[in-house]
Length: 331
Length: 296
Image (cartoon, rainbow over all chains, first blue to last red):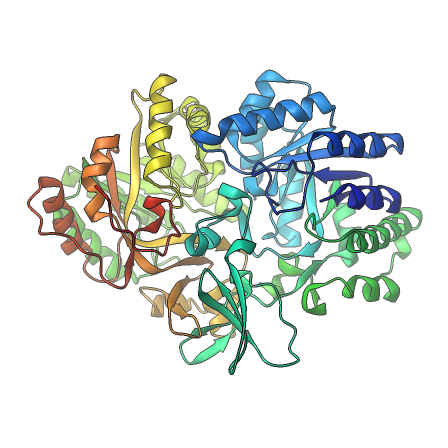
């Protein structure tokens, strides 16, 4: 199983490569990628340096061009595809049919991966993308149970990549407009969920308040761990109850599923977190490298080590991890 | 411009659903969409019931379209999808690329629903090649994007034989999840949700801690708290080439809304103001929940 790791900066990329990534994925410095944050991502020179560094150590580089273009912005998406081709990257990760259509027609040898933003949850959908654009791999959204992943894998016409670790998006990616409903920007349109420009923190008598475009998303008592106000992880009132009506802040960690994913024929596991620090990348990539290698060496006796759990807990949201949708109990 | 009734997004009893479509058969709409698009556990009407209902409704002289599930994750869900796609008679609205794949294999014209991500004319061109003859714009897009997209489509020569539909009234379908939030509210696991959605024919309201009505829980779907209403924008829609305005069935007042939209289209409506519980932001490139006054 290939370990695919995030790089939001050149230093994160180097750390990922040095910590045992088989592939790193990056985005360009604009709204063509779904982690469009100030200070993140790669402009031309940095991308060249990153690519050279990775290639030198035998690590692949994928470029995410995985938001949806609107008419006025099309030249940016087109340019992103051209730039990635010129750089000689190993694959493009895309979601928009227009981007895939352009890339497949113009650069038929450039491998395409269907981004998680493409929202493919079944093998008929995968057939569509294979038939029309020749995609070679698809990243599955974090909404499928392990059984469902296995069933998709059984009939999938392309390689599959699944999420291994990181922030837990509980909505089917590519089909969530909650962010634009509150702020006008969403992952699909702008590559941003709950964008920082709309976040406001305020200490009040009632506690520390987190607002997103003036809407109160959460209120934290003293000493309580205040998470980023991602709107699906806020505390709201439903009937008489005030609680995390949609989801608690928690991270996905599937290290214990490595044998199952391997048995299902999953080709790659993905670490989420292009927005995270090099220290996070190092910790997560190193731990996962050890786990995958240990499984490879001795699949029958694979056991999750306490050390891995402890290390990963340090970088998890709310210090909690979950198997998420992979287990039915979570649903 | 035509008016359509979208599929019922909530879980209603069989009786309530049939009563609704009895009224719909006599209502002043041109197109009726029907079918379960949110959760495969909702089986007051099964696939065959929907097909039968569609066939009987099509005798009312309206165009009838079978809408398919949006998030397809299990083999049983694909099986239902196949059944709907193979009905041989009634047009299908695909809400997932699996439906697009099946319909394009059959070479039969079909509708691309609002949960299919078409954000530009190039994507529309790909879809047209599959057999799409009507597309519904994703709800987070608005007037300006649509205007540019349709101009682009015209320039690309793909506008002929392609209808554009806009979700113009109702709570907005905003997201789909692995989790069922209605079950979560009742502290039930999804596998044993006890079909609680049926007790909430308009979903469950989610308020901020300051009592803003933010969202609506509808099983695995999250909807807007406010009701989207583009009634005042119908003339603009006509101008930029929208062919159909969709009204999404709500628990109350759907057919009154149909009449109002008709009047607005005929130019005989009173001045239209949004109520506090309504929004139109997406259309004006603002946050979806906003109310924007049209400059036109």
